[in-house]
Length: 486
Image (cartoon, rainbow, N blue to C red; front, side):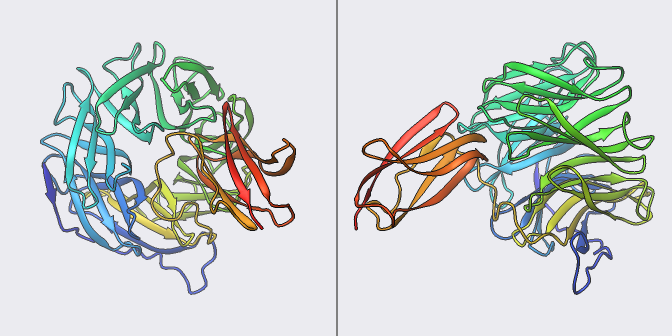
């Protein structure tokens, strides 16, 4: 099942950047593939300065199409590739670090499993060697679009199911442990067709699922946001849209307690299909929305640009060189368009995912050269960025719990570092008190993203003695003692 191929690096598409490139200008690009079709759906840092591109290939592997994992260096040069699959078709929806030096690929297979197609989870090591895999599904078609850490050592797979849906197709959320063993699952949807493509942690230990619905809403399909608990129980859902087709393909936190949903709309904007960005609060209430395009655009992905702005990646038929080009739109925190760039040739191109590099440039993946006799190629485009990386190095799994660590050094004079971890994005208060219970200093008071944080406390203006750092995050609270010795 696992085979290695040397890549046929077909071209470095002529998007070379100038000596003094402006933000948004292409610096370089690479295509990867063979005589048939390929595409990349996800990109992450590999942890050693390079990157991993995950998608599918029809040129290599065992069947008509296989999962394809390509390792490249910081300049996009191919280092190795691996295919995974059997006699049928396989594809990758997303790839994330497994937390132990390896990676998890989530997607679908109809070579293995119980039904026509099954959700497939594959664990590989840092060299791309397959360690184990699991299939999940019923007698019909099922597959995964996204995977995230659950926050307690396991993982959540989000996908689509035709085996277990009430209607024509429904949303499937599954929790597995670190070895991929099934723990529980939940299904969402109505009597018609519904889907969700993106999942993130909410601010209170639950999760938000973004997609589209025909079962609920106005007339045709609407953008759909579902809030579920930590155990997957449905808490509420919200519908956004008009009289035509609207959908969300990606959701991220806005950093202020709200969220941003990116996708497309036929209901608003210029006549036809427009890229659509919707801002909602923690309860899912719509705060504002913006459309972008000339009548034939959509967004597959939204990420933070690292400078209080956001990047939307997808496709445009209205601008660029060909019938369809990869499209990158940068917006500010209010959704106002700052600039946009199209990348492509006379053929068909699209972007599916993006990250910010350690140098602060933007890396976009998708496909190049579609609608040709030999099919598209996997495509990586490097774009001049703002120079502010979002998360240097390999993304880390979210902490499994809330925790306030003992300050270091302790005792201290006159400064010490207070570190804390958040399992999910939370409203945080971090105070310092003296032994009489008087507030000495407020270190943090506001929303903070899930992850590890640290802040320096300066006691130079205080007398020697015992002090207490108190952290509250939602319902969580913890106190640590620290000793100032002068």
